[in-house]
Length: 266
Image (cartoon, rainbow, N blue to C red):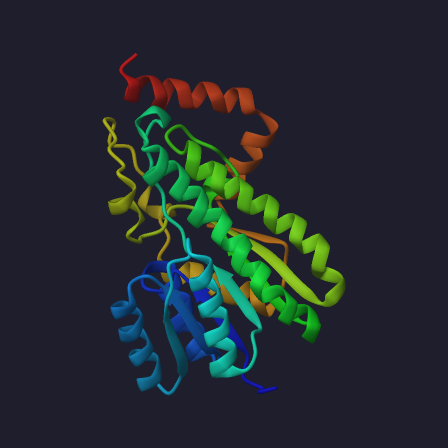
């Protein structure tokens, strides 16, 4: 087994995934990247190799089981091992539930954000168990800790991912395999332009709390170097989680008064 560990990153064509791939390549990891947009992946792979790193770019639609298998098999064929899996692929459609398309918005979000992460973890896990080491890191969201209006399906998928992370961690820890969840707040990515967010109130995340993709990538590296169950970033968001857990009624009233009624025109 090579001394250079191997990391698989899904959704690596942009945003958090691309930042994770570049950071880990700079740290000496051999990087296998999967996403649908192969042109972007190939450009990133070229950038990594030009900097002296090793990478594989695999076109993969993670709603297709055969594509997931191809990503895993290509990694094993190219690098001979798997050490870390970062389940990052995901998207959101942020609208009132009745406005969502049942297939393109509801079913697709659950498929990409949750089911694909479960399936690729299922495919990778036997190798990690056999070598008695490894790390699966699931990129969650504050939406998987605190559910807000218009985030119904997105939060459902991310709450599910959090449950999967917790359960799997308790299944495989005895084999030396770590499982962690990272829960970022709003990140400067392409998420917003694809999510269909249209606020009448114009409310957005304060700039002071808005994360860069590179900050999330650094959080992933931090968790790899010092494994932990979960990490919420930025740290200020922990207060929101505690408030929601301890005083849900108060949070309900605050959100209804300051968001839901204004957005619904009631």
